[in-house]
Image 1 (cartoon, rainbow, N blue to C red):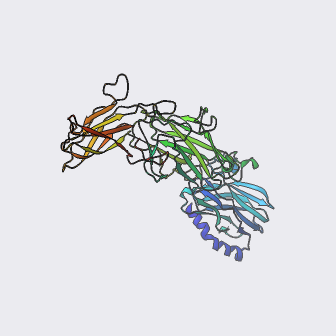
Image 2 (spheres, rainbow, N blue to C red):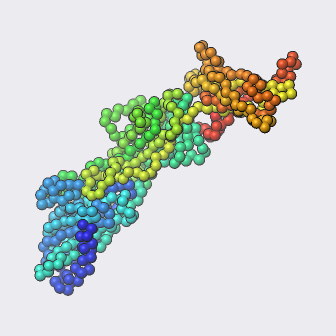
Image 3 (cartoon, rainbow, N blue to C red):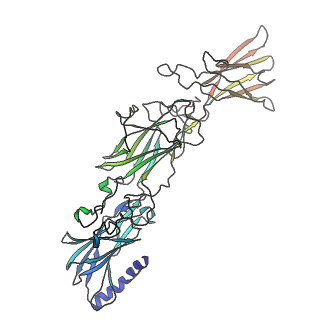
Amino acid sequence: MSDIRTKLLGLTALATVFAGLSYGQTVTCTAGTPNNFTLRQEGETELVSDALAMCTNNSLTQATVYASVSGTITSQKETAAQGGGVFGGNSDVVLQVQVGGTTTAVYPGTVTGTLITFTGVNLPPNAFTLEVSNVRVNAAAAGSPQITESILVQYNVAGSSTPLVVTTGGENVGYVLPSLSVALVQNTSGQNLYYINSSNSTTTSNFTTCAGLSIANPAVATFTVNVKEVVANAFKTLALESGSYVASATPSLAATTGAATQATQIVLSFANIPTAMTVYLPLSVSSGGTTLTLQGSALTPVTSPTGLTGDNAFAFTPTAAGVVTATYVVTTNVGTGTIFAFPVYMQVSGGAAPVQTTAMTVAATYSPTGAPTGPTAVIPTFAVSAVAPLNTLTVTPCLTTLLFPFVTNVAGFETGIAIANTTTDNLKSGGGDSVTAASGTCTLNFYGNTATQPTAYTTGSIGVMSTTNTTGPVFANTLTAMGPLGFTGYAIASCNFLDAHGFTYIISQFGTSSATAEGVLAVVLPNGRQSAGDGTNTGN
């Protein structure tokens, strides 16, 4: 059919000569002024502006009308039976014939690639207008920001065996622009979360929690997903997604002519979520007069985190693969939205979520997706997003790193080292434990005055405080007993649990009655991460 289009366009100049010189000018047409709609770059069934041809007719009674579009046409699929016999086409594209601003006849179109054909079109005498409506294109594959459309009228005149063609030329009917973007905002003050770096990037994972910590602050969202409507009115209700000409005006046409099958849908897709975690999402989000509402069967509001109003939340349990999917549909649109903020509340008990090597992610995309190459059953349809999901949160091992700045066992000195496991405490608001109590070990590395550094020393299990504890919550030993001899320097202890604290005591004239000692607290090192709450460094 691309050959047909080429022939039609190629015949235009020749047809004008024949019409004007040999047979008299029968039909003349000029292009109208379309609205040049903004089309979503992500869309595969984007509605373009109606194309217009303003025509005059001397004596012609019937013609075939073509609409040639610069993008693949994906208007809603229909059948001849739906279109009422002779009115049947394979799509809901229609040609309106208008006289004096009133539609006098409507013809369905048959789509082949980038060409629409309307056959047996009866043309009024004198002045009339041809208007092509409900044309949709695959903007995601258009290859050019500007979509154009031409109307061609093909006819025969008495005494001629060569069809003559009148064309309006290309009208700009759509401009393709990206319409959706996603960013992540970390609202982690008061949560057991930590930034990995200080840049707070929205494209890389930059905050973490450790396996022993709980995430259960109902007043503060774990993070917020900001979905931006980049192009005005890109998020549409069912009525706004529908075409410019609907079947109610012409009973002969199929009932679905011009009507979209659904409003715009935005899907939040979470991946790599621990199965022990609960994800709370809002039932609706509004911005600038536009509202997105969570869809699903038997959605029952739950007692929500206090950061959400009333019971405006729904609890999602991840699938076995760690997936949470939430679909939001545009239910109202009385203005132009800008940023739709989706607060995300994650809750999990300390120790319930395993250590992860892959970050949890979130993506916000249009739905549904497909790969249409012609008339399409579902309107609107979107291309599969090529944008990488945003990394959100990673569950890491719980660690504490302690620096003992000076240790020695030379010239009659000895150093005692003590490490306490304080994961059992009553420091949390209300008197509870601030972290989940857990036993663990510490590995000490020594750096000092020897050419070869002493062998690292690993403690036995440092237990939590309980009546059945056999190892005790405190480790204590001397530097000499841990291996280094004739050593002066410093030591770093890496503990595989939170809330480790250390103390050293330097003893002069060790083992004599005149021994003296001085104590120093170990320094808790930040482990290369920054607190999400107040920006200060912490290792806990």
